Length: 282
Image (cartoon, rainbow, N blue to C red; front, side, top):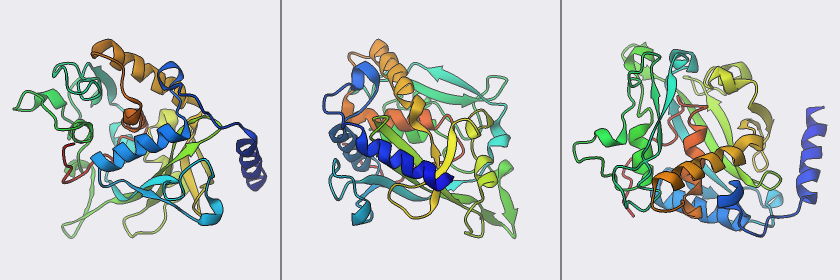
């Protein structure tokens, strides 16, 4: 049954027309060309992400052969989602980077806080920096505002060796929903593939069994967990509108991948995919 459903989705995507006209600001969707531009910006700003051409037999004609999907490997996941299920999501008004840095006090960022309103351990608001909140680029800002590493109180220790799960993450373009799509493949502390129930442990329960599906990856052989993209355009549109209200203008379409990763982090806040090192300013 799963194989038949997968094949049906492939046929639906093949028959669906390719979006040609930009509707990023109006509907939160991307053309294939805009997906590539946003991916280029992500790879440039965050060098832990790279492009992959995948298997030549599975390539999509509407994307460049060498830029079929984005990938980052060995991403740490030290906590289970249950450890922060009591956290609440508090929106801060911080969007200067999307606005080109014109207003240092106008960010839009989502910060994890405890039920009592205190910042979650390991999370820091970008405007708490000693330099008044100046951040070289959006990738660095995401790193500072995310859960930037393992919480010692919530990680497993054995013989003084830190043991943590890791994930290989990839982002494809979904032609039917006209949006990026996140795929996850996890490994346990012994580097064995995670089971489906184990992967659900790393996703907030509100999303785990409503938003996450297990399907064949369009470019890779083994099944992956995927954040289903049916709600992505609406979420993207809300963030675009919020940024536009607090900045000197709407976000650029090449910044779309940062917006996408920001709202995906609300579902999988324990997977530190935006924790990058040696990020160079543009």
